[in-house]
Length: 310
Ligand SMILES: Nc1ncnc2c1ncn2[C@@H]1O[C@H](COP(=O)(O)OP(=O)(O)OP(=O)(O)O)[C@@H](O)[C@H]1O
Image (tube, rainbow, N blue to C red):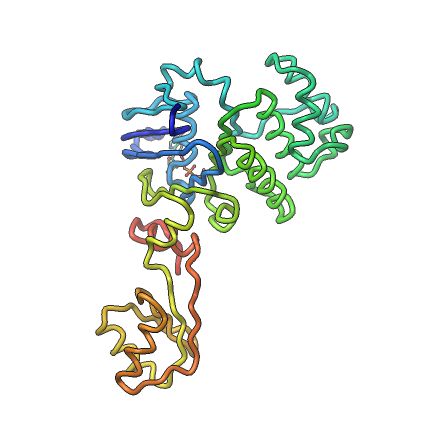
């Protein structure tokens, strides 16, 4: 049994713009996506997510590197696994005047999926009753869920969604998230790319973070957060100046945030209070700031010149 749904090693892609300039979109990407559950493929805009996905699906050619999908080398053996893969890379085309159900029925016929799947996939994406309505009356979120429903017709083991929540309102984002979680819970593998960390953190079992086409971190959400120095303690203390001197001398990083100091790099909160108390500085308030994927992401991509401001 293969352990990984997707694996890439040393994957590279350089584009040449019309003016002849070279853009290295993916440079030596090593990506491993375990079988089962939701895997977040995260990176800022332009970090190479779409390019990597397009190479995996055989839509564009890699310059170098190897890729496997369910242990089959792709693109060479893509025909052997393509039946197990469903993907949304661009907005699929549906007929606006037809109902969601009719659109799916036509698609099912075209790809040889049984008609009974149409009702099942409508239910799986919570479109159920709305299947009777015309596509053009759907909200953006419903249109996107119909696209997901279409990928499920073939009962794929691996689903690849490139930024599926782009342009959706919070309710639409939540619906897509729940749909992905449901698919992951059924034992399917969902590979979902996003540049919005907060969205993925809530749904992903494992994540890979990329920057400039390279892997920066991967593992379970807890592992990636835990491996980072991003856990911060917020302290209120009388003398910012003395406290900063003491904590900096202890190798911690200190930033001023209004009436508070934000201290990074401490093993635990007690470590901060102890060091200050030893120098007769007493903390009047101390708040551990939970690290989240967003702060880890910013920390990792800051070195790449990709992260935003902290
Ligand atoms: N057809 C192309 N020709 C030239 N450059 C391209 C082309 N497609 C992508 N690029 C460049 O390659 C880099 C990676 O782009 P890619 O779309 O893969 O990133 P991404 O992480 O998916 O970003 P986004 O979330 O914005 O889609 C970017 O610098 C982009 O401008």
